[in-house]
Each structure stands twice: as structure tokens, then as C-alpha cells.
Length: 213
Image 1 (cartoon, rainbow, N blue to C red):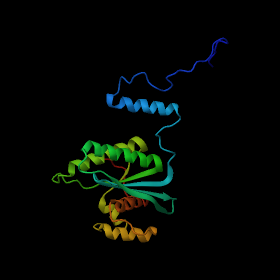
Image 2: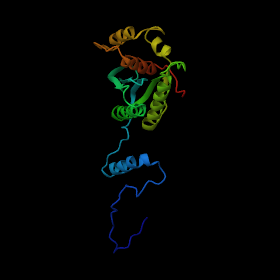
Image 3: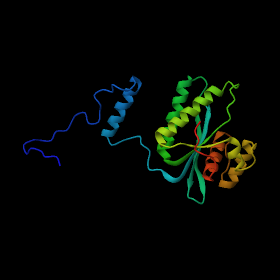
Image 4: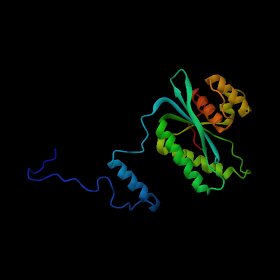
């Protein structure tokens, strides 16, 4: 137990959580650390909520139209509660596009607090010009999931999650029709968000593994 002299008046530091200077981190993170310290003083943090045990975040990786979907429910059934795209544009510098993807994923994880994350593990062909960008996107996704979710994503090959609904070579329009019927959806947009819903659903069904790249 800490013994205090009766004549001493407790003092409150003016710095609170604010560090005097971040000497052992890269300069680019100094302002971020200061902002986080101030947020602690105000009782605000970017830490995610307590995860909902049956909530899944499905991710279809892409540099231009990254698909995401939230499935929520219980151990017997789930249903898409929200889904959409993280879009970046070719006239943006690549680092800016990657940073936007990371920031948007942080927002999704913080807002929905998924208990699990499911990510497509695409086949990578080094002869394709887009391969380098896709690999960097996958790196950003894995980093964001580990940083804000504190766990490894469940990985599924395209043929695996497609087979869960149809056949390994099923096209997106066919998968959208099945998902509309399965989850009583209407007018599902034929885009990467269809894949994200199917990826999350396949992982909820028990497919995939937590193998990293």
C-alpha cells in the first residue's frame, strides 16, 4: 500500500498519457501516437468492441473493388447484415490506395466487431501485370486483420467457397442467384460483394483453414 504524507496534496500531471517524445518509433508514427494518447485522455480508443461469437467478415481481395460482407446469426443459421465495396482508383498512387484499404478495414472491424474473418486465397500468376498489386493488397489485409482483429483469417481457395454453393467454376451471376434465394435477398449487385458473402458463408459452414501465405 502506498503511504502518503498527510500534508502532501495529490497532483495531476498535465501530460496525462501524452508522451514527451516518441524516440524509438519512425517519425511517420509520432503524430498517430500523440493522437492516440489524447484519445485515451478523453476516454476514446479505436479498439474494437467485444467480438460477437457468430459474426463473420468475408473479404474478396482486390485493389480496385475489394468486396466485404458481414454475416451474423447463431450456430444454426446466419444472414448477411451488411456488405459493400472498398473502392480505390487507378489515378491514385498505389501507397494511397493501400492505405485507404487498411483504414476502411479498420473501420469495418471496429464497427462490426466480427469474431471471425474469412479471406479468399486466390491463385497468383506472376505473369499477370496485376499480380504485384494483388499481393500487396493481401499483405495489407493480413496486416489489418492481425492488427485490429488480433487473429489470423480463415483462408479459402476460390474453388472451395464456390463449391459450397454450386460448382468450382460457377460464375458470379449464378452465385448471386443462389445467395438471393438462400438469404431472401433482392437485386443483389453482381460484383465482388457477392463473392464476399459467399466466402463468409463457406467459412461459417466450416470450410477453409487459418494457413497464412
